[in-house]
Length: 304
Image (cartoon, rainbow, N blue to C red):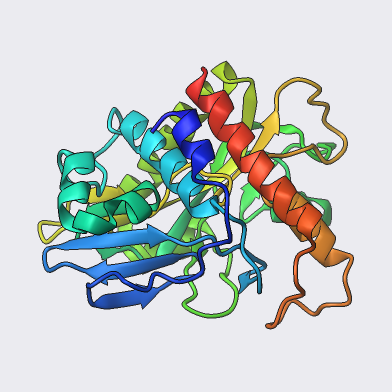
């Protein structure tokens, strides 16, 4: 899809349900609905928005389309590093599966191979922000990675670091060390995941730089087939899974304006809310800003 086609998808109410699809539902995630098609899965991105691992009561119109189109664009780039979960001839195969529902659902859907997801999220940080910055202030390190003294918020790290977390079906994910991750995955798969994550981050950082963006950090998810081969799955390098900053005006020593959900988190932090469901309703200006930032990120990437 080009930008004009994507823009046309952003009008109207947020899509919070996937009623009408005639497939058995396998699971509902914070954002995505997953349907079982036998040897394949259909993943449909809703317009739900989550923060602090809680789904907000109101969504962002078109967000699922934006996330899917950003992911599809990045999956095409990622093929140079490793195989992905997308089926061959994805666009045509997706239209064939959806049939008469293609116009409504294809822009927010992915048709993928059925793989076994690994039970960790593979997080790579190139800059000191978020929970990494908070831990560094306390300990001078981030999950076992010793860092130079005197770094400031948003500082570029000497080299990207791999800081995985567990994947919680409910509640909050837990940040873990590389050693703990190796225990969970086994040494051989851990090394492949770590190497792939760092290579994908390097690719993302290079492409983002050309688009006038800084990729501060991101998370990847991986799955294996029956032969144990590793694939990139889920979403990739979207504003939901990544922290993007504009390169122009970047200055360490403070928080940066971003194309991700940080401003949503900041608004929520200022509310009398304990980060447990139910979350407060997002005001219209926060919803509109989210849509604008996600679209701006996609526009910059596609124009690079």
